[in-house]
Every structure is written in structure tokens, then in C-alpha cells.
Image (tube, rainbow, N blue to C red):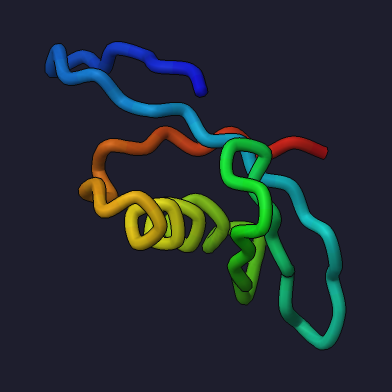
Length: 72
């Protein structure tokens, strides 16, 4: 897991997600950092928010602690 500093000085965890399936208007996401964790986004624009929410629920960290990278 990679950490990065934000302009405010707080450290954020970088999570990497990728699309495993795209069908029926839904994008199924998988996480490099958390094997077995998945989430579903309704559009490409929704991916960062959905990924942060899923990672936060999985780790019990605040959603704002994550930076999302999307791997193609």
C-alpha cells in the first residue's frame, strides 16, 4: 500500500482499483490493495467515491483518507 501526502499535510492511502466487469450499466470494481473486496459503480465518474466508500468500510478508516488510482 502506498502513502502520499496531501496539500493539507495529512497522509492518504493510495488504493488501486480496476474494472472486472462492465454490463447492464454497472461497473464491477476490484481492489489491488484488498483482495476479495469488490464494489459496483453506476458510471466511470462514480468510481472514486464508490472505491473510497468500500475501502473505508473494509478498513474502518475515514473515506477522506484514501486517494484512488484507476488501473486499466
